[in-house]
Length: 404
Image (cartoon, rainbow, N blue to C red; front, side):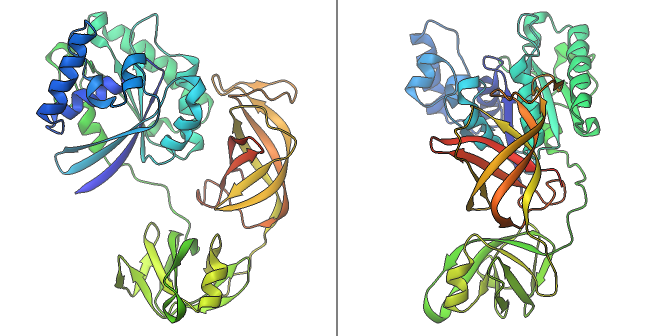
C-alpha cells in the first residue's frame, strides 16, 4: 500500500478541518465513538452536525473553531493511504504552516467558492510557500459549492484567477488540478456528485491517488548524516540517501572533516544490503572516531571534488523582522550569517516591489553570507542540500532556498 502525505493548505474558515472530518467518515476511518462525540459537541454549540469536530481534538480549537497547530489524520482509500497534514490558515500561526507543509508530498489547497471569501492573500501566500518548500504538485479543491447552487461559472472564475497567479510565480500548471467539492455535504470527495454533473474530472480522492512523474533526481551521491547508532566497534553512521546511489564496499568521504571510510557493512531497514538509493534510510559501519565526528555531515563519493561556498544566492521568506545577529541552520549545522537583499517579492501577488525594504510575510531574492564555507547545492537539484532555516536570538524567523 502506498502512503502519500498531503499538506492541506488554505485560508481559515475555508473548510479544511471539515473536509478531513467528512473523508474520515466516508472511508470508515472515524470511529463511531469519535463521530458521536462530535455530534454531541455540535448539539452543545447549537449547531447541526459539524464534521470538523471529528478532527479538532483540542478543546481550545473547538471553542475558537480553528485549527491551532499542525494536525494529522490517516485515511485508507483503494490501494493508497493518505496522511493529511492539516496546517493553520491564519497568519499568526504561519510558522506552524511552514513546519507542517514541509513534510507533505502533495499540496491540497482549499478555496471557498463564496464570493465574500474566495481567493485571499493568505491563499496565494500558502501557494507561494508550498512552491518554496518543494511541493510542485497542487490540487485545488473549490469548496462550499453547495452554498452557491453548484454554479459552474463561479468555479471557472476561481480556476482562471488562481491559474493566472500560479503562472506569475512560475508554478508548473501542468501539475495542478481543480475539483469542485462540498466538504460539509461530502460531495465529490470519494464519489462523483450528482449535483455537479458539469464537472467531468475525477473526485478528490481519485485525484490524490494519481502519480505525477517527478523531475530527474540528482545522480551524485549525497547522504545526509542524521545520527550515530551503537558504541565501540559496532558504531554505525545513520543517514538518508538524498540523491544518487551507494554500494556496499564503496569508499566514501565525509564533509566537512574530509575523512574517508568504507561502507563495508551497509544496512537498509535493519538488514544488510548490497546497495541503497535516493530516499532510503541507511546505516554504515564506521570506526567510533569517524562516527562521532559525522553528525551533521554529508557523505560523498571519495573521488568527487567539491567547492564549499560562503555566499549563497537565495530566495528567503520571513515571518518577522530579524535582529542583527542571525544564523542559518543548514542540514543540522548552525552557521552565523548576514543577509543582503537584492529584490523583494510580494508573496501574495508575485509582484516585484521597488527598493529593498523587506516586511514580514514577504519574500526576497538575497545573498546570504555565511561565517564558514558549507556544501550547498541548487534547491532545484537537491532540496535537502539547498534549503535552510533562519533564526536569531528570539528563535525562528524565516526559511530560505538556494537559487544556484
